[in-house]
Length: 111
Length: 116
Image 1 (cartoon, rainbow over the protein chains, first blue to last red):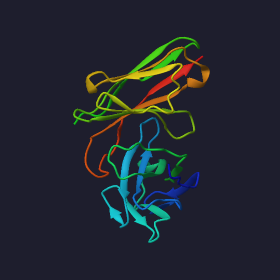
Image 2: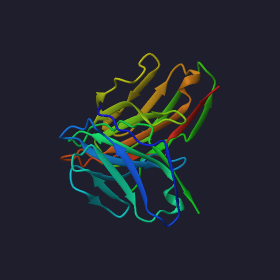
Image 3: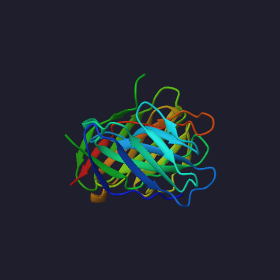
């Protein structure tokens, strides 16, 4: 399974943008970049995924480097409810493939 | 739409006892996963089912853990006998069997096991 590297923790302030980095230098051409987050005492939840182009949805934006060796999850205006562990995961092209979680980044939001 | 249901939410047992966790996936989801999450770590896949067949159980400690998915719907994960290191949250997830990489995983809230 291709690996990702994320900072252990990050801190930001409420109502400010947050940029969560992820390095995946060994990504293969068919790997998708997925982001999940885990709020306290809950199971992980899907945030966003992409292959080559930048992606936007109601939760976040995903910026993917041109060489695909890194990506950044962007929360445009963080709220206290965004405090969670964020996981960047590489996943093969088939829909039923498993997710392999790393340690993730623990995001703290200051009021 | 109802989410992934798991029970019990909490369980405390003594080592060498047995325990079982139940999962009801989202209706129509063909793929079901059991993950183990030890405190401070990311979830680790134990077993993956597609319908009622096992796709991947390479990280399931088969000497003490077992799982089944009868009729391709509900699933049960059993630990017998439990060890102290089995203390963790057991997460169930399901996903639809769709086309190219659209199989978002939906997780339940998990079952927290404490082994004393």
